[in-house]
Image 1 (cartoon, rainbow, N blue to C red):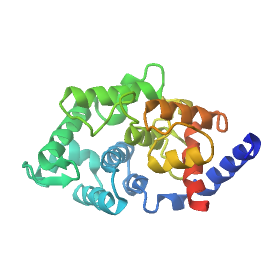
Image 2: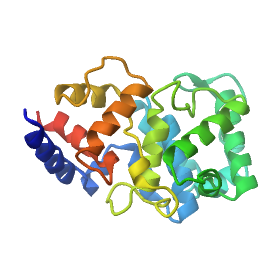
Image 3: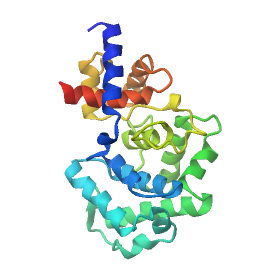
Length: 248
């Protein structure tokens, strides 16, 4: 496949699959079920943290949070109402997270919201150069310093798939999927591709990357390859890679 045809195919696939139908069965659906900027970004952050493993397992956990918060995710976190829903013990909450770990994460998130006003306000304070990397590093540092490990992974030491996905949701505007709430202070050209096994496989099949190891270098390589096709919006390529897997 020559480069010109590959670029054309990726553009066509991104247009075909970046539609409201993409929300069905995707964790991005949940942030569209609440109203208000701070509610949406809070619901999106919660959804991103739990989005790993099998969808039939993590989607019900996010749905449970949506229901228990009554669609008021910001208030649910800010006022500590989650303590009424999650017992502080070592019972499994989801996969590697037990209830105690989940409460520690939610407590740290609550402190962020109380001290800064919202997740978006925290991100804006940390993005002096209007880049995604500043915010990814700030999130990773914030939770790690509070003893929360793995839930909000930092770039460099991991692929940071879920934080990169959350940033795509928050920054890309003009999309039926992504909200673009932070488009005013983060440049979408600085976004990174959320890398998982499926995305990596399709990227290799298309010859966009050659490496076999999922690490931050692979994220950078793939993002740079997609930047050549979507120079102003490299994360748009996420939809193209999804579509390529579906259409094969």
